[in-house]
Length: 348
Image (cartoon, rainbow, N blue to C red; front, side, top):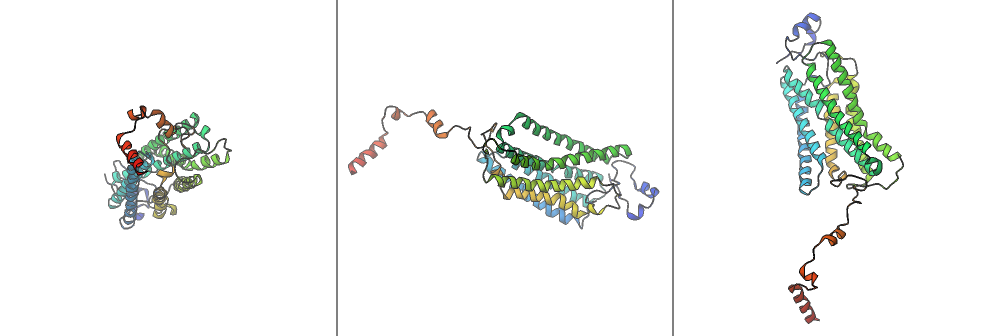
């Protein structure tokens, strides 16, 4: 289904705008969106650059994930970052196709769906890192069931809100009812606000964990200094929160017509507060090797598991479980050992 965006000269009166409105769904958006409708001359070259960057990010994170997997080093966050890069690759492809077919409603819907869906993976990864830092700084409270269930509830809410937002995005193209559009806008604003809060959560969690006096020593995990881990997490959280806050803040502004977008909806803002901050986070995690810095032992379930304090000493376990050979039981050395001792005695 194709639709026609009204030109500036055609939007002078209600009669002309009604004549441009298609009679069948999906309907074109009447209000401006961040970045506007992509164009071949401007958006395709820029989007192609980000497409290349996201492909490089996907290759890097999957390579790290597979290399770690072969060594028995499970770091699921690398696979999640690979998934995010794949979602953004699809977003870039859809945006390029949308630029070549600006009147195709289905492509516009798909581009906006993938645009909204990808970044939540980065929010979840940062929350997992924040949780590990809290558990390291305050093992007893960090491993408390209430703290664990609180994070689980946040993850569930992230998924539920995402489904709600995607539903409103699709529904907005298939209705002209003013009340339905008002409800869709309210849900989008609420969902955007929720994601902005989620992107900001690492700050109060980590800072609160540092301010509250510790009762035990830090249960260190991964490689590198503990303060470096905090710096990495807060840097990525700042970038993601910056993008989320800009998107949500501009959405709260009074909607403007599609042919008269506000300045803050220009293409530069779209690429800076979306793709640019995301690529910075993706390559930051590659360069600093978060798979090493934020790795915890498999099966960690309580205080002391991160630093391995609860793991039995390998030497003691080996002594306790190793089965002695027949020669050791009867205090007899193997033949080659006897020959060596004999030749040694002859040399002496």
